[in-house]
Image: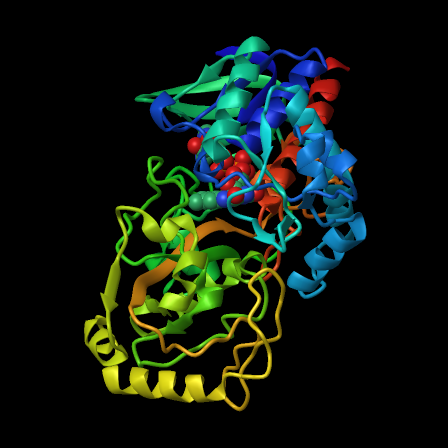
Length: 493
Ligand SMILES: Cc1cc2nc3c(=O)[nH]c(=O)nc-3n(C[C@H](O)[C@H](O)[C@H](O)COP(=O)(O)OP(=O)(O)OC[C@H]3O[C@@H](n4cnc5c(N)ncnc54)[C@H](O)[C@@H]3O)c2cc1C
């Protein structure tokens, strides 16, 4: 038997932030990672690394990353005030987000970024993915101008170095399978380490071991029939262990248990994420093209908003289509606007010089209906509004269902390219209910459970139906810090 002040279950972003925060309270800490050292880091390691936080001025951004005077003078970083961030969260979650949790997330977001930087994380302006030059000046869109250098893999690497520096041991291939609980207090975890069973005792346990996105049985049970067929965008280790362990001893479930974050993802991507490809199986430029299902029909408004505010729910829409796939179709006018992920080596793509020739290559699609859909769409595009990809340009369609609200241009310029996608699940929204100030898990009477804390994807109540991009990592940092600090302090009392 081993004994520590705090045991942190998981080794993704939320767990790393929790472990460092507990250590800062003077606690002895151990981290348990189900994966091997090669595969450590959870979904955090697969993440693109964009992070959404509240800021108003370039000075706020300079607390997080280096921006030279020249860069500041030549760029419009926009804003993401607390009000804007909170409004977006409310809007996208249909006003379901927990009022206390979302306020803590938003209000704590800039501080969390500054703290991450103090722990050695390097941030850079997101020149590549979220900006474009407009009238000689770089303009950022999507209210998210900063990303981690090296993406999610970089984030895990920086925090891993901080954990080593703080002398926090990590036990790999050590899967937590149950909580040590006497009916009143949690005092450690039961683990399976390779082939042996162990107990690790602690005064406080922080669960930060992800949702149930990599568990097909739980996906079908909670998200609904068909979800077992989704591809997993990231780690194969997030199988709902932490949530199950806590529910087993009476923790309260919370949030949108039938909801998840899921995106368009290469149709033939592997079952789980590939760290060498990272997030590049995603296909986020659909706002400039059409999404076509097996019946040859469109099924969503591709241009209702920037991808940051629709991509997390459109994966689920693709899953609902016959055969669970959709082709993204573009013409040559927008080729230069497609994100880098459209140019990777592993991509399911067809091209043709006419729509008729393309139709024959769209595997599984009713070619005649596809051609009719494009004809109707082309005829419906408003000609009186100019196209502008850096704003919601209002260049929409008239008289077709579903409409395309922005960035609608006729599909008329060869060559035409099409990319086959299916649904890739990122993480699940349902989780545990926590005390907002301490991250302590609440029981079903909504009373704090002594010794038990949680953070990251496991926290229920923040996201419902949809999600603004870049919020997962910030949420992990904000609630990881809160849980780690409280667990560390409690273990010293
Ligand atoms: C492809 C992709 C791209 C993304 N891009 C972005 C982005 O750009 N910006 C953003 O904000 N978010 C992004 N996300 C979402 C983001 O990655 C997650 O919200 C975030 O990483 C969750 O952090 P976490 O620490 O809660 O979970 P994870 O990082 O998944 O960590 C969970 C940890 O728990 C471990 N574990 C699981 N079960 C056990 C067990 N029983 N015992 C011990 N250990 C266990 C896992 O191995 C892992 O180490 C992306 C996700 C993916 C998959």
